[in-house]
Amino acid sequence: MTLAALRAEYTLLCDWLFGQALPLWAGTGTDRSTGGFFEKLTPQGRPLDDPRRARVTARQIFSFATAGQLGWEGDATGMVDYGLANLVRHHLPPKGIVVPTVAADGQVLRYDFDLYDHAFVLFALAGASAMRGGDPALATRAAALRDTMIAGWRHPERGFEEAKPRSLPLKANPHMHLFEAALAWEEISADPAWGALADSLAELCLDRFLDPVTGALKEYFDGDWQALSAPQDVVEPGHQFEWAWLLRRWGATRNHPKALAAAARLAEIGEGPGVDPTQDLAMNELNADLTVRDGLFRLWPQTERLKAHVSALATASDTAAQDRAADLATRAARGLRRYFDHPVPGSWWEHLGRDGHPHDPNEPARASSLYHITCAIGELGQQLERIGAR
Image 1: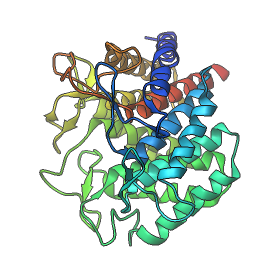
Image 2 (image 1 turned 120 degrees about the vertical axis):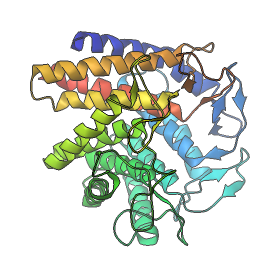
Image 3 (image 1 turned 90 degrees about the vertical axis):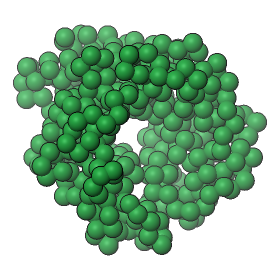
């Protein structure tokens, strides 16, 4: 398959996103009575009134901001403003930390520090600022939140604690999303602290998160950043792809061969033992020895598979490497589109089973998955545009 096939997949993904998904989640998925977003829709398209998390509001802000940059003709600006208003009203006070979870009526259900939620709030503020061509107020609030996190929850070595007093295990996943947020801010801000944060997180990954034997990304660690053994030695193909994408971005800007080599190995693990050869879909979990632990197929690893291979287009050394990256990205895009075969246009299945059919026909669609989908489509569009400009 060639770049022409990948461009065709991009068109199909955009048509579905613009024509079905965004209208659904801007309409049915939006709780106008409370000013927030519903977290789930049933397979019949009915919203569930679950508690509202900062990370989901943040992800929706990013999704609509990205949609606007991709050329969606809907009210992207209005949806971003709506999301920001909800974020400020319920989750982001003028000073201090993020409020992770509230009830639909705004009653605070959690007020402890959550690194994952903080990472996504920073990421959302970057997406909104980029859409607005730079917003000093958003930049100031993001920098203050970053500095509060560093002052209060910085790990003695590198990275961040999960809580204070300490809560174990330490986790790679929220650090990955904080790395993503720092890179997003670095692209639009002259504040050198964002680049310094990105550097610290990238080096933490290269030094501590990667198995020295297999090169796989580990998930759980003790208080000294030592990887934990079974049963917490899980290897997630989706995160191999996601870290590959991020390390490739960071390594290219820093001319860092170790990061680029690590990214290539992570993508190799994701695409090799992490992809089921029959269904051609990324699986949920592997064991430490890279044998299958959970062979079901969630939606989000398919988006990360797409991003990892699309990013390889930018660093392809020759035509053969570019063709291979385009082929793998095309296969990933086709796999992703299988999840959109849903009775509600614009919704999706969160899991496919080993037979390739919906694993649980009663499972709701999660609003949080829209972030994964729009991010992947955005990355694909950006790289295709760069290739076309060469």
